[in-house]
Length: 70
Length: 415
Image 1 (cartoon, rainbow over the protein chains, first blue to last red):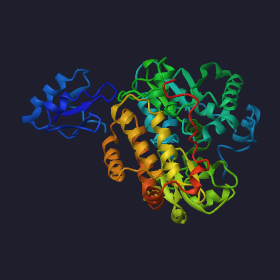
Image 2: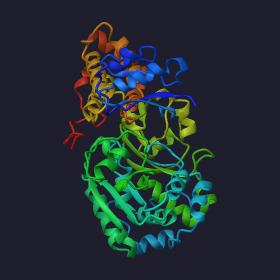
Image 3: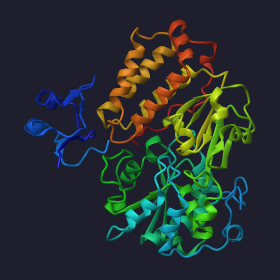
Image 4: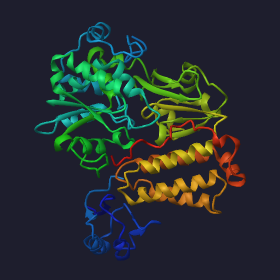
């Protein structure tokens, strides 16, 4: 089962920590909100993904087996 | 039975009383277990915009345990649409038939009918119709704020559950958690009305109109540069030109047609002869029939103003919850407005491309996606006019009132 990163766009307030911690997968838009790769996260990067999710001050970022709806 | 189906026997301005409704359509059958199969065989898809297969929705709610609800989404937040309020005003019993049949089929005890509070005639007709029938006590008619996002189903449910008119992150979808956090069947009023006719006449009859892919009839709201704007019932797949002719024909030479409203698609007037109004026929233009909004833009209108003012309107109607929408729509609106007024920054087009690509599919709801589609197709169809405005500033048509209804909303989406 592959893991994906998802953001709750309502909870997210654009702190941008996630992009600092996991730049391989997350970049920021022009207003500082994360643009996240929807694809499956390779095994060797999962630790980075989990660290980014845990660091989110709004708990808006989750690593989940569920593929992002869009 | 040919057209009209939904509007059969109706008269302008007054609801069809129960006795006349029964005389026109015949008695309403009881819902049995076969209803969901018949709706599936008919190929009925939702008429609220997303064209989702109705039978799938019925089954997904019916399969959930415990208490369930039916929600008639008549919020009709799209400014250029009137078909839902017209249907509820003229044929309220047909909508109620469908809602009560669906409730019986899926085992729901209560029906809530949400109607925009400005649509007083539709509110009165639906209340009156509910009072005319024994099962009417199961129906609650609720006025909801007349704002764009009220028709977005998660925002509507959040509001009816006591919250603001603002979307929620989905999933959970309404069939999982809706009214009072219980599984809820949410359909457009027109979809319920079609369901009531399929229950009476069967799937074969339903498919006598429409195309193989987009079955049955549909209500459309035609406005803008036509002589007789209003709501019509058409067979899905009807040529756009015929629909414009039924609306009295163009009142002036046309520049373009907007199909699908504020989240819709611009199609240049030269394409009109090749446009058929069904989801398959519209695919070539990147459009869907959605909720049947058709706006004819005359050559005397200024497309740059239409785009600028509608984008500003959409930015003002964002719930402001999601960063990409709350920031991106105002940025897009300001840039288009600058282009329209001849004050565009040198990299204006690059900014529009960049921001459009950045915000799409990044909101909790589809408002930003619809705004991006509206803008992208408008930029393609009106490239000449936008270029002229960017170089020379406002044109003589810029000061005319816009065709699209972009007056400041009486209330914000935060109501």
